[in-house]
Amino acid sequence: MNTSDNKATLSFSDGSPSVEFPIYKGTVGPDVIDIRKLYAGTGKFTYDPGFMSTAACNSSITYIDGDKGELLYRGYPIEQLAVNADFLESCYLLLNGELPNKVEKAEFVETVTKHTMVHEQMQFFFRGFRRDAHPMSVLVGTVGALASFYHDSLDINDAKHREVSAIRLIAKMPTLVAMAYKYSIGQPFVYPRNDLSYSANFMRMMFGNPCEEYKVNDVLVRALDRILILHADHEQNASTSTVRLAGSSGANPFACIAAGIACLWGPAHGGANEAALNMLKEIGTVENIPAFIAQVKDKNSGVKLMGFGHRVYKNFDPRAKLMRETCYEVLEELGLQDDPLFKLAMELEKIALNDEYFVSRKLYPNVDFYSGIVQSALGIPVSLFTGIFAMARTIGWIAQWNEMIADPEQKIGRPRQLFVGSTTRDVKPLDQR
Picture 1 (cartoon, rainbow, N blue to C red):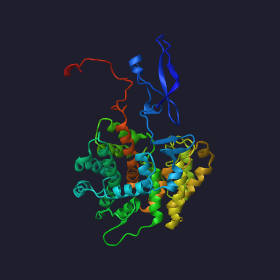
Picture 2: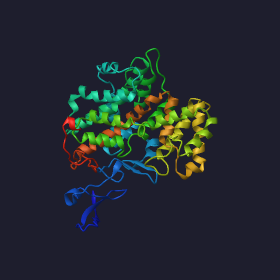
Picture 3: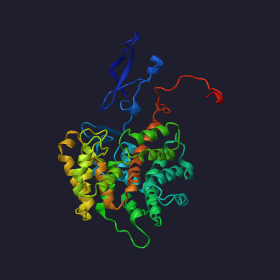
Picture 4: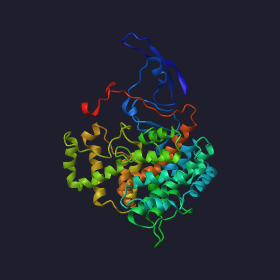
């Protein structure tokens, strides 16, 4: 961190002495005021619900500029990575800080590929769930359970252990997600194959069965790979912050990622693409769109437009343009342009891009809108969308966790509060209450 020549001065209207705080400059983005000594110097906390103005860590992994619509992984624009790199190259980049050369990529791919199987006893974990259990519930349980099988990589202070755990999580998540799906539909689990790429292997484990050989479709595999790249990391979002907070206590990486999955499950976070597709199904037909749009514009209706706009991106989501290209590519490959659901989605997209109400509020289609459509076209059930998101985001979580553990300034997370409850009072005997 570079200290700025400027200082921030906090003054008080009650005559208390002013306090100075150092200002740090990042390589890009806003400067930050270091308020670590605020409480010691003034006896006061800051108040920031949702941490909208608080930097909880320093990081060199991902940078977002919401106003410009910019997303960088280790300095590389997401638009370039999605076109010129595959998912495992992006994983290597997020973990190690640089894109791999040919030799490094080959070694990394082989290492990940050799770790894709899960312990055979994991099958018994799945049998403990009801068949209709939500896949995210299953993933929270099974990912947390991985710590029971891999005691040899749980020393978080050992860099080699952290590296092995990272590889295991990246490699085994597709297997667990596919197992959750197979279990829900009553089909046998499909073991991974070492001669397939990461995304092709996942597609086969999802849709293959012992009765016939699964035919890999390169267009669909490329679409899934792009979904994974676009969702791999997104700075200090709710689930990443959850992973960091869990990790700050010294919890093992499998427990931390399970915590991240639990947070991602929420409809305001990872469940957004599921909510977007459910919205399309509720609208039903193209003819119902005008009535739906009227409800969205009516503040009293409580109806929300899902999959449009973004909390961080104030103009456009840079991932959305890439996902839109993939969306049209997949629909064309599968001949689904005339499918009622997809026609409805494209019509809604057209209205949102041209209607002054949405344009003035910058409610552009976001990545979740398109990725929901793509996943549905690939045959992935709506309930598994967030599981795919978890599979993609695992690399971001583990890279952020790894960075945090290695940070000498890392401390256990302990947010403060503004207490507004009762002051001290005495407990009365039962007959006097």
